[in-house]
Length: 261
Image 1 (cartoon, rainbow, N blue to C red):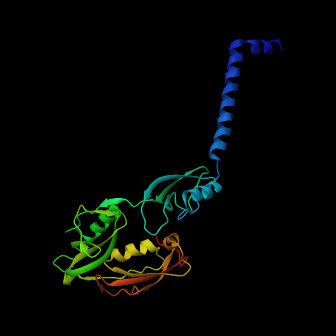
Image 2 (image 1 turned 60 degrees about the vertical axis):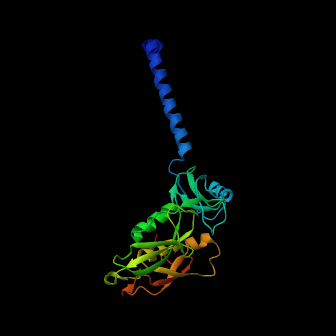
């Protein structure tokens, strides 16, 4: 007994024991703090905030233990000013509570952008450059030429537009493209289940024109249109070749099918 008291009374041993106890307390406190901070093992589903105002988006996100942050803005004619255009992480993603959701909102005022020079570039490159500038590819007008899908003219509202001209973001640019008779055919893609914007991209990527976009009556807002999917198209995707520039009409509704991005 005296030997035990002697050991405990030794200041070196006592300090070592106190040090070990202190470390254990720090580790336990850190573990509890991190568990509370990260809510270990808990995940929440990111809600769809598209079309909402920033205030409403913050409210919806807050109810799901998430936080919103406006990170960028674009200008879209058909959406309400200040409405959420897109978000990251996407709706349906599984994240930790308190995760920040980055929002891109519709600008209050349209931005001015510079018209690029698309003459003598390919259709694919022209489309990419227009998108990078915030401009929209419109009608594809084909004329006889040695090189198929070579841009011959760029037009805005039916008139040629010079490179460097200032336009509002979201302006529609039509292209006059070359068409060689020996390389003039393409195919109509099967658009069933495609979302609205993805369907437009697929049509244009196949050197075809969008002649009509028909939405079911249940689609009332632009946000609805972005979520809508194709359930029918004219002409159908038969696998038979058609001439480039052929017009395609698509019919869309909500929950038509599992959407293709």
